Amino acid sequence: MKRVEELTLKWIDGDILPDEADELDRLLAGAPLARRVHVECCDLEAALRSRWNEFDVSEATLARIHDFNRNRKAMTIAGDQSSPDNDGVLFELPPEWLSLDDLTRRLRRRRRVRQFTLALSLLLAVGLGAFFYWGTPLEIADARIDHADSKVTITRNNEPLAVESGFALRTGDVVDVPGAAVASIDYDDGTRVVLGPNSQVRLEPLTRFNAASKHLALQRGQLAAHVAKQPLGKSMQITTSTARFRVLGTRFTLAADETKARLDVIEGRVRAEQPDGKNAIEVSQGQFAVAESPTEFIARPSEPRVARSLLALYRFDEGRGAVVRDVSQVGSPLDLHVDRPAAAEWLSKGGLGLRDGAFASSTEPAKKIIDACRKSNELTVEAWVKPTLASQSGPGRLVTLSSDPSHRNFTLGHGGDPDELTGSAHRSFFIGRVRTTKTSKNGVPDLHSRNDSVVADLSHVVYTRSADGLHHLYVDGIERASEKRPGDFSTWDKNYRLAIGDEFTRDRPWQGEYFLVAIFSRAISRDEVLQNYRAGPREKRRESVTSRKTRDVL
Image 1 (spheres, helix red, strand yellow):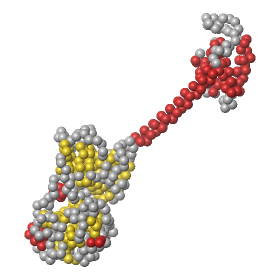
Image 2 (cartoon, one colour; image 1 turned 90 degrees about the vertical axis):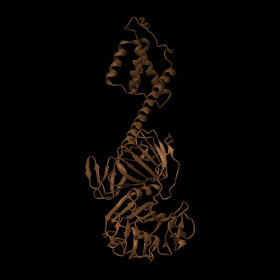
Image 3 (tube, one colour; image 1 turned 45 degrees about the horizontal axis):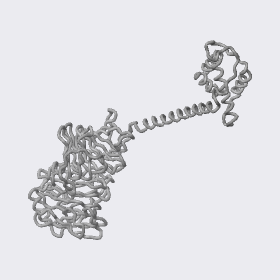
Image 4 (cartoon, helix red, strand yellow; image 1 turned 120 degrees about the vertical axis):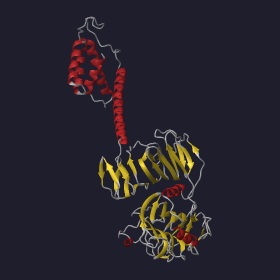
């Protein structure tokens, strides 16, 4: 009789289908017990209507109840004579057959089942919607090409695209940097990734479920990255063929090919692990690690700074006073004296900030630098600096051996007047000038990085000139410009003094912070430039750490 009850309740609720209505009529016509169950259900609906006004009983239901009740005591049981209830006599519906409370509970239970089914369906719909929403790959990478040489290419869906400053990147894009070129990827949160020559990266797909806020695959080459602090629970992920690196916020370099990858951490920490997540270690500031299967991960101290042919070294860790000490321990110290101490600020963790026209200079000619460089016809000027502004004019003097804006032996500068170069209003580049027998007394023509290559952030800038006339300019361990110009240093002036932060005429100021300045009497090599960059401005050292399983703090 469960089928009769089920169809009756559907009929009462108005949810019965035509085929089900025909089935109910056949059951009621052929079985007295079915009619009795049907009547009881109708009685229950009527009773509920009289007890609770909110129950709506249709007129059809009331008519059917009235019809059954009028004839219920005269119904003749017919049909199957084997039924225990079919004894060929009239019968009354026993009041104890199914009490009103029992039927009420049954109806309420049915209502609860329907409500639960509806709630479960809604929950399932919401869950599926959330899954597809959070699990759908994101096309937008919140990244753009800040600057790129003309030979840099971007491939999207197997189609090459024209590259220009501000080009918006998408996940799946492949950035290919050929030899003698460079490209910079900037993210909206301030993260910057600079790709060196012969490098290729792919922006990997992300989902909202993904624990990575950014994902790059370095397929070959070298990159230098400064990662801004990432959101809670998220990290930037960089993968190579042999390792996976996760970063919350730090500065590092990464070089990779098909067989190995090398990570050097300049600031902060990076978690390094095999592609399957095993053999994980934390690589801290002043350490490096090499991923080369099946070699075990080990974090080792970075190589020390290059010292050969060093002439002057300033670490800016005095913390107070008006003198920046030359700590090279080569010849007589060439200390620098701050001209306006009130406009200079010693930084708590090391460094010196120069603002509002402050600068520092030697009180005597830089004899040991001039003599050694004239003998070798080579030079390296290195600086760890943090510009207050990315665009500065002048060019502002980072380091200069000169007397005025038109006479110098060398200058490492930042920015310049528009008419000095191409007429462009952009002045966000580093510049190197050195006087030779083939240049003007001002060291022109000069060598500079491309426009928009400077950020208001900690930067490692190196300018070198070798005896064969090759000039190189590096930023964060990556070559940004090079050129060959003949000549020698025989025309250098022996009376020029060394200065930082401005020209001696006080009309070429540079605003920012200094962390290290070094001068060499030779052109250090590309690998040595990278070695000094990897060492960082403070050369922090830690003991080696063998690979181990670590808590996921990055």
